[in-house]
Image 1 (cartoon, rainbow, N blue to C red):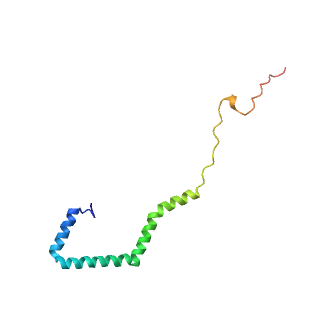
Image 2 (cartoon, rainbow, N blue to C red):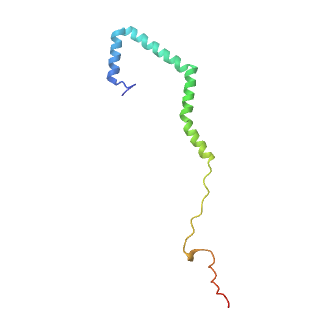
Image 3 (tube, one colour):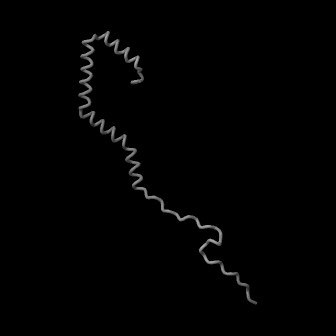
Length: 102
């Protein structure tokens, strides 16, 4: 599992260093303050606006594709090509060539 290109072992090392440097009491206060800050950010109007814009931008390609398919008319159906042999055509046979009268 990686988070911001930091592995689990590295996260444990950072946590242990913070525990040693700040101590258990300060680490609890720091975590609580970070949680409160994130909570305020998630409930702010700026975050809600950012979230709506992100959702709209993510759905934009699908909306455009859907609209393009609704406006586009299907091409007209073309009849199958007529057979080329004279036995199967519906056209009358050609009249025989007449010879010139003399």
